[in-house]
Image (cartoon, rainbow, N blue to C red; front, side, top):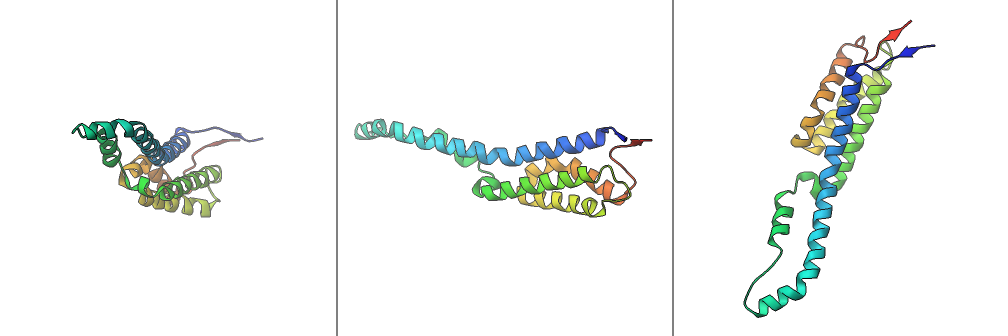
Length: 155
């Protein structure tokens, strides 16, 4: 029976990939809620804005629209890019975890993991991609040195 333990490198890799997926998927969700909030408040304030317009005052929801327009990253204009980047990050992380207990094998997983992570960084953009750089470096090190195992085995 094997006794596999988790090393800090594997824990860092899994935590970093999970944090990267969350940071890629969170902005489109938040900006969707802000857009929905702007539309709901726009409908609720419509009668009052009409009355204020008749009185000569101009009132609109400039604060919500300026917040929505000022916080729009690239992934919120195309949420499919964020979903695909999160999927690539997840598959790259799974490939790294699958290759962690086979230092002499799993060459395909070791080669695919950094490629998928690099594609996810390109798709997500530079800002969310910086979060995944430690996982990318660990995947590159694991590819260059196949004997570098993320978990060690006790006989």
